[in-house]
Image (cartoon, rainbow, N blue to C red; front, side, top):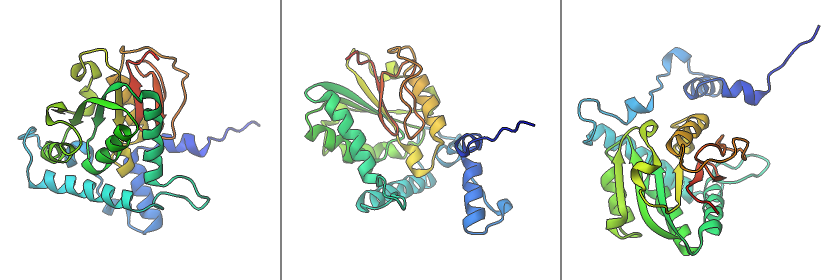
Length: 248
């Protein structure tokens, strides 16, 4: 008799992110699954009655995400496993440095799905310090509470006229909607770092958002985040980073 066993990775990929969170809390803390309420992003970050205006609840959840990133970047050891590996700040640094090596001395649009000022400022400063010229920053977010904070914080780094925003669900985003010229776009989706989205979901959004921009091999490299080079994505540089419209 022949048996087939799924790998742990394959099994994990079949479980929605909410199911993984519920399983982890039950296993490590002992909560009953029925006592755990896991909200989808469209519930946490979206007010259907007034989708373009922030309110106190949307401000609060944005502040929580901001606090998590501030603490993560301040801790040089956070996210390292027992055998070493990369910390949160090291992973962001490495991905930003890979982008800088490709784009040093060149213009790019920096497009971000799910903006958060602490993490964004860290990446943009690193790119600029290494010779990348940011033609525009484009934030794409379902939560309107991020708009004012992002504009205020990024004004210390970029000309305010170069900061643009779209309040829209990620799945509706298309890079050609926000970048009209032939300048390459560095597109990021780093929300999975906070557990907002499954990496495979983020990968699908990036694929759709960059689709038919610059065809590339569907067998391109796979990131730790689950993002794969494919239609519309020219290259992947690190978890949640990809390039569109760059023929080099």
